[in-house]
Length: 271
Image 1 (cartoon, helix red, strand yellow):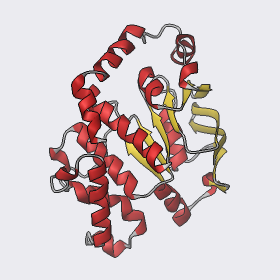
Image 2 (cartoon, helix red, strand yellow):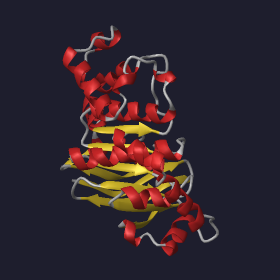
Image 3 (tube, helix red, strand yellow):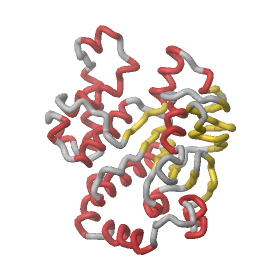
């Protein structure tokens, strides 16, 4: 389904991603973990073709993605949606219009200029917002929403593309634990209910263990772990983050306790 072979990205003398090789044979929810600067974001940007690889190949359903140009490249980017840590919404635009921006690659330049959308697309956008528990926010400006709500708008915009793959680059890094829970539950539901592949860069071990079927660990641009959450032991984590890193079990246990609070469990009803 998705095959990445010896994928490499160099910036001058610096190698951000070094010969990454990944094979995914079915829709899976994958967490990518590692220290800041490990190459996680660069890897996702290459998969989406926001950044070109220096070497290596990406193949999806027998199509070589690294070779795509022009309209074919844009079509791939509509099939492989990106969600960013900072949401990338238009702050002064209403929520439903932000969601409808997910259809831009399918619309004419004229329709884009005059902000013209088919009624069917508007209904679909509201249905997606309802699925994510924020349909009542549809007419509000994006800037009026909380961070967690804005990230769900960004997820809704991605779903408007009807993608085969959703790439989430640190989707919960700037959110409080309750909103982080809701966003991760949303991504998990999208994977399970829609059969979409989700690849998310994550900043905590427990988030990867809790939500992902497979975990990939990166260090200094290289993949140093690729396995199940059960295989992500403390020893393996030290290999990923470095022997001197402070990722104490106490800190991760606190996160679990926070996510198990009643108000957080209640928030799961929205997804």
